[in-house]
Every structure is written in C-alpha cells, then in structure tokens.
Length: 239
Image 1 (tube, rainbow, N blue to C red):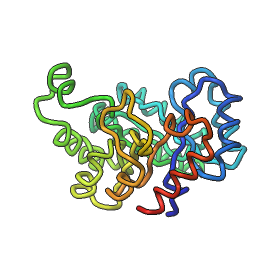
Image 2: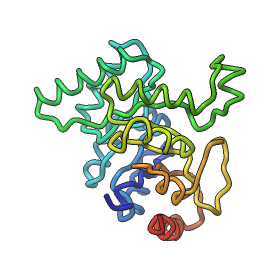
Image 3: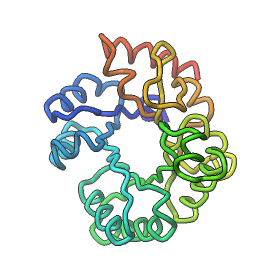
Image 4: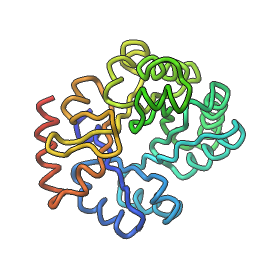
C-alpha cells in the first residue's frame, strides 16, 4: 500500500462546497476523505455521494454508539451509501459490534454491495489516564483499556480499530498485523498539538505500524496546504 493510500484527509468543515473544494485541491495526495459529525450534519448524505462522484473513497466517522438494533440500522444505511469505511464505539459492547458486522455482511452479500471496513473506536485521543480514572472510573490505564477494547472488537469480527499513535504497536502485538489500526492525532513535526493529547508525527505513526493515518487541521490550517502535504509526503517516505 502506497503512502497516499494510507493517508486519510479529514474534511473538518461545515460547508459542502468548501469540503468538495478540498477534495479537488488535495485529491492527488489522498484517496480517502473523512466525513465527520460537522460536515455530515450540515450537508447530509449527499456530500458522501458528491465525494464518490469525484472518484474518492469516504471514511464515515460518525462513531455509532447506541443499542444494537439502532447501531445496526445506521450501519446498514452507511453501507448503502457505499462508504469505504465507518466506525462504531467499542464501548457499545460485543453484541452491538457483532450484530452490526453480521448484518452488514449479510446485506452486502444480498444486495451485491462492496462491504465497508468496520472500525471500532477505542479511547479518544483527547483523553488521558487522568480523565479515564477520575471522570470515567476506569481503574486501569489507557494502554490496558485500549488493548482490551481492541481484542473485543476483533472477537466481534471487526476489521480493526481507531486508536492513538501511542497504542499502535501494542494492538499489532496482541491482535496481529492484519488487524487494521486507523490513527488520528497525527501532526507534522512543525505543528503543535491542540485538543488531542496523545499525538505523533506521520513518520512515527507509520513506523509503529499504522495502516491509515488521519490528518485534518495539520494540513488545512496551513497557509499553503499543498506545500504542507508535499513536506508531509517526504516525511512519510522516510518511514
């Protein structure tokens, strides 16, 4: 897999026209674009269709987390949109994840749809051990908790997980190299972190074994996003 196939650009904007402009501008550097809450709520499913019409894949980042029946119905709708990948919260439990995965597989076989990759969100990159312990009453540390949730996602039949760069090698060690790790919290070496606490550079994440790295603000907030991507590509190639 080339570095361009490993890079997911986050369309963290609220306007469909702006999002599609970003796809046009940066399409030579990435094949997958992330549609998250902000863009999906403001622009609706049509923005996914519009990105597909430009020949690009969509990672639908809506982090489904509800009772199994509700998540399953949302997952089927996402599959019919033709997205390349979508995610669910692993903290929704084994039954939720397994029913979601099985129902999607059945639908795609029945309707001749390419099955999207289903990825489980472990621990958000905005959280640290203090929040986990003092606010969420999780007694063990982040690494132990992420390992547990990744193994649970694997047991449910998911394709992989979303995890910070700090847990990539741990997940690969316990779940195997074929279990995908999608990694947010990626910042070029010259960009400081913001609300994400567990971050790394593209080079660090890929050397640790990330299958996909998600980048948004580190590119889009630069004065020249194309120049930033060219510099990032050099960093990635050295990994």
